[in-house]
Amino acid sequence: MFPNPSNGKLEVRASEPLRQHAKLIIYDTQGRAILRLLVQKGMRSTMVNTEHLAKGVYTLQLWFDNGSSGWEKVVEQ
Image 1 (cartoon, rainbow, N blue to C red):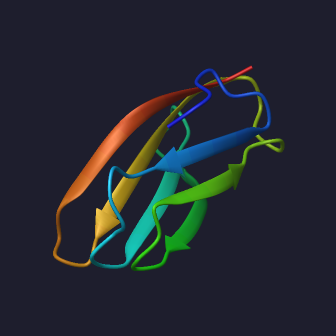
Image 2 (tube, rainbow, N blue to C red):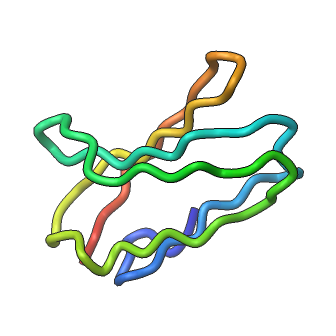
């Protein structure tokens, strides 16, 4: 994912096309989900508009149809 820190736009990229749908969720420091996107099967990257986020640290999580997930910290400047 880049750029990180972000300044309004964030690209989330996979090393290969997704084999299943994924939910992309961004959480604030209080654990509240503030952004939810569906990433379609077959995609290699998606752009996330972060312009509406206040400056700070967020957690980006990807949930896959098979129940697995991954997460990263995102800094919004």
